Length: 161
Image 1 (cartoon, one colour):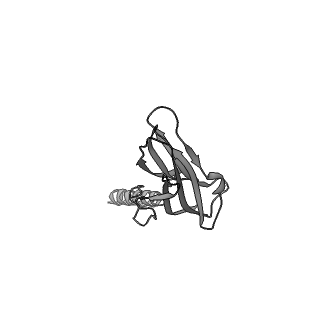
Image 2 (cartoon, helix red, strand yellow; image 1 turned 180 degrees about the vertical axis):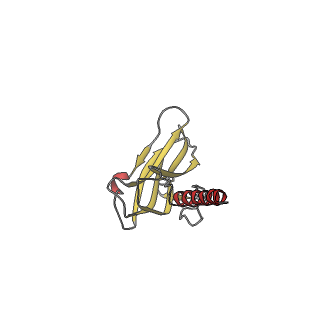
Image 3 (cartoon, helix red, strand yellow; image 1 turned 60 degrees about the horizontal axis):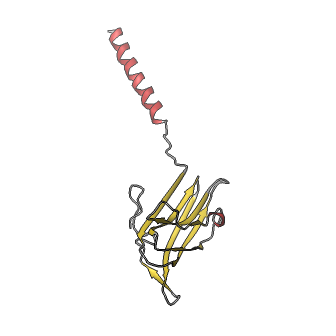
């Protein structure tokens, strides 16, 4: 009887200790960087200028944290297209600030990819993405961007749009 009680007590003690030990273990999931993009088809027979604007803000970031707005033109060939980011301006700015990239694509272009990325820890905010293509008269015309204000809920690390 004593031996049976001792076995039950030992089994219960092991269960309690292992449950307590595992419940105290926290698995932290982290990424060194994260990016989100949108991509649109661009086909033209001449050089077209564009402007990409967005509002960005950073809060509580570490010294190695950064965020940037970027635009990249993918060409039909292996040759690189236009590519630019504004990371040097956005490393630490706790105020909403509008950033702009001015670029171009031409007859070699296939797609315009744009978005933002972040590195390390902090709170990074993005809003009001705007894209404009220059018309033949020199004025810029807005291009529709899906979910440009990030009002739709992000699901499974995917920005709807």
